[in-house]
Amino acid sequence: MRRQRPAVMLTGGRSARALYAAWAASPAFITTHNIDYFLGDERCIPAGHEESNSGMVMHDLFGRGIPPGCHFFPMAADGDKESQARDYEKILPERLDVLLLSVGEDGHVASLFPGGEALSEDSRRVVPVSGPKAPHDRLTITPNVIRNARSVFLLAQGPQKAKLLERVLAGGEAPSLPVSLAMNATWLLDTPIAGRM
Image (cartoon, rainbow, N blue to C red; front, top):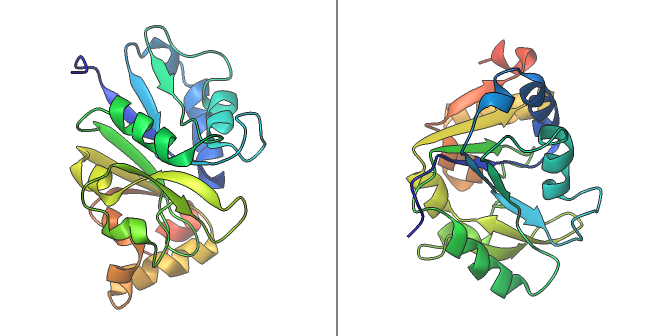
């Protein structure tokens, strides 16, 4: 059984870059000790690839080093996807303390895409999926992980995501969109979106 340490799951995507840069520059960041950091999804590409979520986290958040006593557990996703998904499941804590998600313009979170089979997964916590945009092959957490997290934060930035979240708040198609899994999350919005909510 894992020892009890704070567990934080990070997100990929463009919206996270500015957050990670600001977070890394904060004097408080380097003084946070003994936290385990995980990833919610990863593209099946080499770790050094420019679209690697692990690479982005290492560059933008941990560019000056991982704080003392902290650990980052990247998703290995450039080999056998099924075995790597099961390996990542084994290292995940039973419950995350903080889960950070970002929403895509199609309403996806992590690599849970509208209509994807992973949305109905009720026993696994990490699974291989195929996304609509290249690189298609990915690993992702499942809804189980989102529902079980103690605190969930959702990042949204830009006018297209503002329109999406307005539709979600209005109801209608919301249940069919993966972002509906984060309806009770704390939403982290940029100024244009916040002004429309």
